[in-house]
Amino acid sequence: MNSMAVGVDVAKQVFQVHYVDRETGGIVNKAIKRAKFLEFFANRAACLIGMEACGGAHHWARQLTQMGHEVRLMPAEFVKAFNIRNKNDAADARAIWLAVQQPGKPVAVKTEMQQAMVALHRMREQLVKFRT
Image (tube, rainbow, N blue to C red; front, side, top):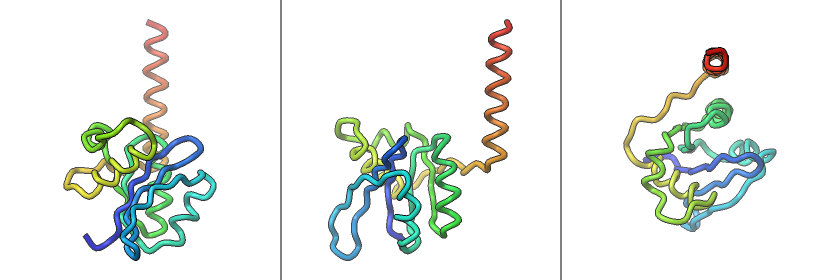
């Protein structure tokens, strides 16, 4: 693999980022506030970024792809196999970092229109369920 792998655990306010620094060889596992997330990756060379597939991850994947990074969204079940510690943001970011380096079929990044259609279908399902 030519580009540096980065595991990102997406949360509401703080994102946990895990990677191995190429210059020092040290493991970096740090929290980044939502407002500084894109700025953190804007100042980096193109890298392989892994995230668990969820609604918010598609937005961030689109933004990071525009910056020239390769983003792989992975199902939570696939990532879960790599988490050997207690469940917390740092351990999840490490598990995502391990998972993104493995071969597997990533989840396709949805466009805004595709996400809007999914939301519309879910609202319709809820309405039908409520009325029956």
